[in-house]
Image (cartoon, rainbow, N blue to C red):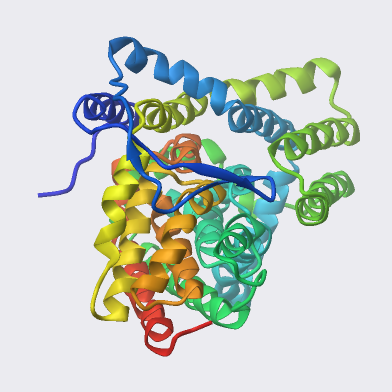
Length: 462
């Protein structure tokens, strides 16, 4: 019997209902906090029960709109980027690039062999270095048609940018948003332990590449094995694949548009790394990019606005699923049960064997990641407890930080992540289909995480 998960919207609404019900059963609790270096940190040992705040029907019904408000940045980002990419697609430069790569893919065995490894590595490096996460969303619009043109499937097109960046984020070695914050809270030198984290990143990226290469070879032999076979066939019919074989090559205008796009990406990386840019600045950059490529492609004002609005309109459903996902976290917070759940999980880490303690810490962080999937937010919430707890159970704080990081390996499949459900909605890919396909890969990530946590636990990695 095949695993069948409900529609994404139904699943998220059901989660909202279950969380609202839980606030009537789970007692309210709170940790005391202190402001340290501009950050609000939880003080271990200060948990106490507080008056329960059960969330009723009104809270359940208003959670989605509150989710829209709190997730306004990422929703606005998605809509603007969707509009910008629609303008980019209107110039036909992306189509020209895809056709050129497809032709090279057919002619060159080297291109066929390196396509997946090179792109997965690039996205993974983005996650590992400057915290690429939401920034990977627009690339789905490029890699799905590219994958279909290369006789692959939608799953591969989504996985290259999305899974690549998320795995890089989870095994990061220079990411200030998770490693930097967690080490600062744990009292460790910034980005210490870089060598071993780089090894973890290499293993996770290698596993991802190997899995996608295996899947690509399998789909090329028998395309009907893909769960998205029928949908992909319909998409290919819309793409006019015959044009790929007859394509004469990119024009100067196409190359100029792509150069502007590449320049925008370089500026984005520089802004994130050097200037601390986040969603607002990146969205503004893509808006400027869309206007620039529109001028280069000589689109009229009416053509530009029609394309931009069409792209944004197509992502209204994406905005809704992001709001619903954020609503689940709001109910947990307003019901005052997040700290209660965390306090109940923390004692479960204790073990006579350091390796088992490290494994349990990782599993607990994976559970917490289901509810709080912000790297910075998780670090601020859990590291003040997990760091001293590591001292008590015979682990180093460096190991506790690594366990916290690896807990984010589940992000690509959790329905409470706005990025995950946003990407799937953008790709028109059902959550159930995606989760079933990802389960073997998630199993490999689990085994890898348990393995790489064992050595630090046994050798007192500092």
